Amino acid sequence: MTDLNNPEFIRELNAHLARGGVIAFPTDTVWGLGALPQAAGADALYRIKQRPREKHLIIMSDSIEHIMPHMAGYPDAAFDLARKYWPGALTLARPVPDAATMLFGGVRVPKYKPFHELCAVVDGHCLATTSANISGRPPLESADEIRRTFPDIIVIDNGCAPCAGAPSTIALITEQDVKILRQGAVNVELDM
Image 1: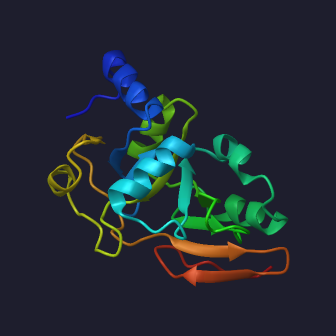
Image 2: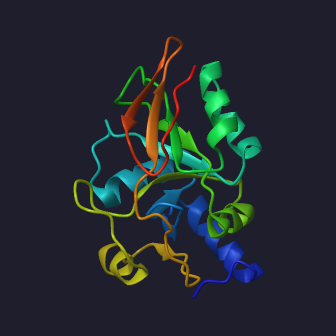
């Protein structure tokens, strides 16, 4: 068990993340892997997942206010959808001009109290995230599976499990329109 109320554990957690370490945690959809949204954390996520660089990471947080600095350049439609569906299982993606160098392709604010409690103690309140699995394989379904697959990460396991078991809906937002790339846990009404 990990204790997000324990100052010593919180210091250890943030030191691990600051070194480019990866953590695992349940979300409102599936188990996730996360690191700080910077190059070292992103590199670690790509490496342990064996994930192709063209598949971008998502930045998640506990509030719109904390994620706003990561939404520079998003069209107005993204903010309209954020106000309507966040917190919730909607990922807002944007076109990425350079797939080889652009690490983060979307943002999301889940509706899940244990994830909010985690973000509240993480320095910066945001995590670069991806599902907990080896790229191309199904998401791992338990803390034990994650520990066996990724032995060098910290698993945030407070006895909580993911809620929906379905991935988030992904909406690609451009200046011209909104397109659903993946239908997931949220049915988005495109009335824009």
